[in-house]
Length: 170
Image (cartoon, helix red, strand yellow):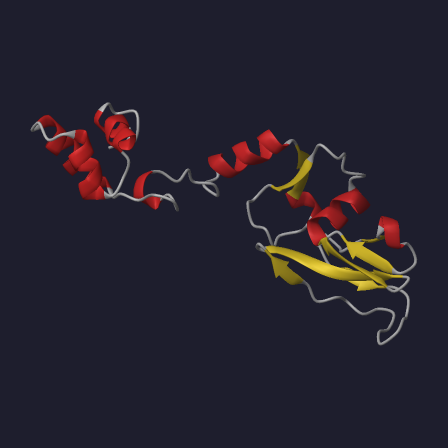
């Protein structure tokens, strides 16, 4: 398929975006020239470019530019999804407009979003082995306040672990 170019909606006559996810300057300007393809930077893995209009700069995600140019405006309550899960693949055929829930479901189904459980969670204070130790000490009769002190956690946390309300996967 040949690369097609369309004007960037809010920057008509200044920038164009391609069906392959490239952004080009179509009008000359200060320190730049017409026909210059912009080099994207990455923000959270998504390619973006800095566009200028009237001396005002704006950083814009390329996937949003592609969708708006080739598929139409993106309603405020919808998002752009990369069908193949690759954030840098901004070809128009790889992009679709979805709800936040659909985007999250796609990320979960494709393995891009893995729920963080147990010691993999960024705020976990315990390991799976410590949780098993807490349950063992409780069944042996040690007081929950003593267990809490030993592991530097709250007594209520010990109770939730013992009742399998917390760390249910262990």
